Amino acid sequence: MNDYIFFMHDDVLDEHRRRDDEWTVYLAKLRESGVFEGGSSIGDGICASKSLAPVAITRHLSGYIRVRAVNLDAARELVVGNPIYEAGGTVEIRELPRTG
Image 1 (cartoon, rainbow, N blue to C red):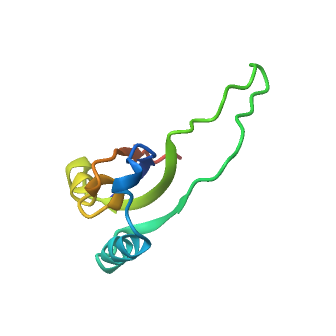
Image 2 (cartoon, helix red, strand yellow):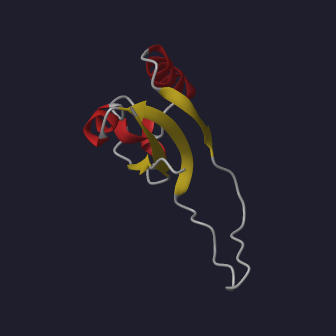
């Protein structure tokens, strides 16, 4: 199994925003399947750099979910039911490579 992170983009029009109960159903589905590793909405923050002038934070990200899946195709299947995805928005899927 590999670790993946879903970055939810804030690109859903207001009239297509999903309700909290849709998130409850989706997250319950991930938990029940044993793939859910955590997640959260993302608040305000800053970028910090020791050697460069700090840049603005990435404003289009609204949250993340961490999951476990066999491969990228299996991770892609886990996006089905995600309220952002189902509303026509973007969910970015990235593998979290193991280090060590």
